[in-house]
Image (cartoon, rainbow, N blue to C red):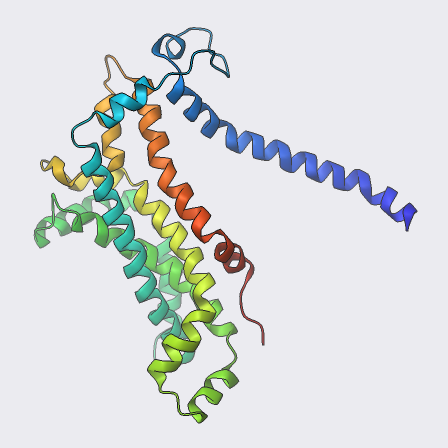
Length: 280
């Protein structure tokens, strides 16, 4: 036993060291963003940047929260991301159940279309979606941001939830019907709690995608700035001639906090969702 432990210890040490180095590389940009948010302007503009600060300042955050429309942008982002998460989760759950539990024509074709939809870059659809939102009369409204993100979230969510629904034994469904449960009751009181970890996992990706969106917010919100979201607030501090990097980093830090809070709230179910949920 001791010999085996000695044999495997170098490999385990190398793996842990590699994981630590990767974590440092991934976390360093986040650390630099937060550090720059607290740095005074003199240190940010210094030609000799240092990975620390001896005079932390809240001036950048004061400029961010001093913006007149920052609170409105924050609320708009919450509305967009929250709507995308709730609506896409609801539709994806019903659709995943349908393609898993029912047999109908073109079911396989539909599943393949979900995969094909994931391969199309969102940038390629910006112009067609712009004209579509214009024809629907949704430009300069939050609806022009909510609808595209719901559409982009659904293929991934349906494909992922399909595995969770499939993992629920059909014997459980038959037993529920024998006990007198209706299809709706089985769907919401039995199946829904079992696939909830998968819903949480897909919701995290939907939330992050909608929360961080800049391309569509810039393309579809043209003149009504009251409908802008938080990523657009960064433009207030970024000026080609004289960019306020402290303000940009402070606003980015504020934008990151809701994502971290959302992740912390759902982390337990997220882990189980990514690892798989139900076993027969």
